[in-house]
Length: 237
Image (cartoon, rainbow, N blue to C red; front, top):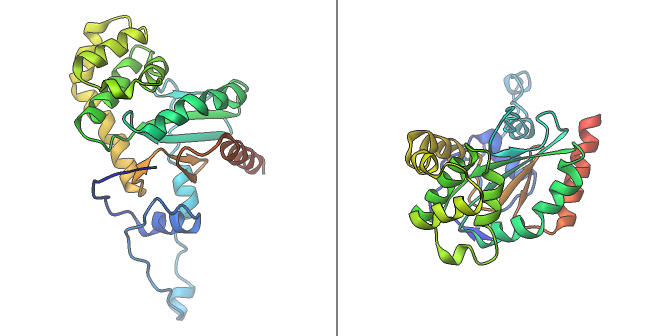
C-alpha cells in the first residue's frame, strides 16, 4: 500500500475512535483519546455522536455527480480515495472495480463515489484535476479507465499526456477540457476531496468506506463482496 509523506491533519476525537474501533490500522488516529470520567456528571452528559454514522454520512449521494456511478439512493455507497500515480489504485481499478460495477452497480445495490486524493506530488494533482475536467463532459469513468490502464502510470501525467488521455477517453471538447483543468473549480473540487480525506485520517491509497465502514488497500474481490453484502443487510434493518 502506498504511504503518503504528507503530514496528516488532526482529526476529531470521534472519528479517531471510529478508525481505531473498526480496526483500520492504516488510518492513523492523531487526536488524543480522553480517559472516561466516572463521576455523576459524566454519566448524565450528552452522548457523543456515533462515529460510524459520521463516516457513513460522508456519502454525498448528489444527483448528477460527475465523479460517481450508480443510483443516488442505492443501499450501499462505496467511497474510494485514490491517486492516479498509485500502483495499487491501478490494480484495484483494473482487477476489482469493473466486477463490482457489473455485479452491484448495474443491479442498483451499489453506488461508487470517487474522491481524488493525490499524495505523490504535482503530477498526481494534475491528473486529479484532469479527471475532474473530463467529468464535466461526462467522460470521468472513461478517463479513469485510461489513466489506470496497464502501463499508463509509467508515461507520467504531464500536460501533453493528460490531453492525450482525454482524447483517448473521448472527451469531445479538448479546449474546454484544458480550460477546466486549469480553472479554479477544478482546484476547489480537489481541495474538497483532500480535506475530507485528511479530516477522517486517510493517509494511504487506495482507501475505502463501505457505508461508513473503512476498508484499506487493494483488497481481493471477496473482501469487497463481503463488505457490500454486510452493508446491504444492515441497510434493510
